[in-house]
Image (cartoon, rainbow, N blue to C red; front, side, top):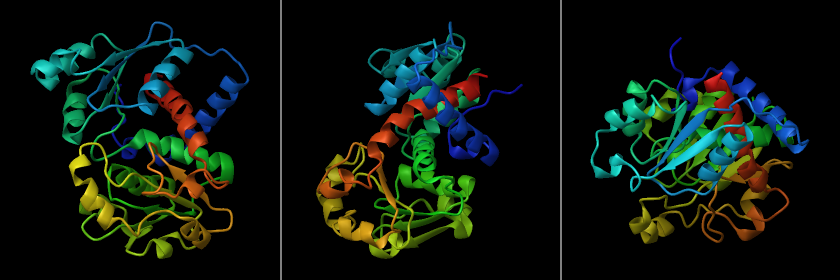
Length: 300
């Protein structure tokens, strides 16, 4: 049987993704009930971090511990990757020692090269092109609070970045409508957008994007590696803050999400992220449960 990887949401079928979300909700229930479930005794997850992280590291490390396994934190400073060892050589060695490998890096091409020679499942924990694990948590959170996301409308307000790309893929896989509000020059990648067809529309007015939306979501204006563009981006995105006014354009029971970390007063108003419609803390917690379900799926 060939190895299954999770580099984008498109690596799983729609049915597999829906089953994974249901399993994440069940694993969360069992964990909160205090049930011990440790099918991964003797299993090891290698975690390669070329980008810093809070939620990704803690959720994967805690998840493996809760499942009875062990997680290894590896940074470029701790490995030969930081001294120029070919990526493929590292992949060949690690995949003979670990049962799964999680990578958080910059170029998406790196994780594709790594997965191409790995003997074990490789999980994309964020690249400059996609952030699929976050979308598992987001969809789980919506399902828990509002039911099935199929047929709903989601408003993405902000940069056409890796999170936006994964929302586009999610619209395809979970069958919802996505309105993207971004300033000109910050659109998502044309190939990713085109593949989604009429499920996705770009608009320039965030109020128009939010109108009737069941979920409004956003991300920071300047992601890791774009800090030198901060001032330029603040000017470009000045009209793209998710405010109470924006949320009033959405459906009466609309919810707000943010993948975190958040910059209050920039991409989101304090009154929104800390308000009654915000699900960001459930969303952050669900990284743990969704990734446990993902690991269980990939490791069998």
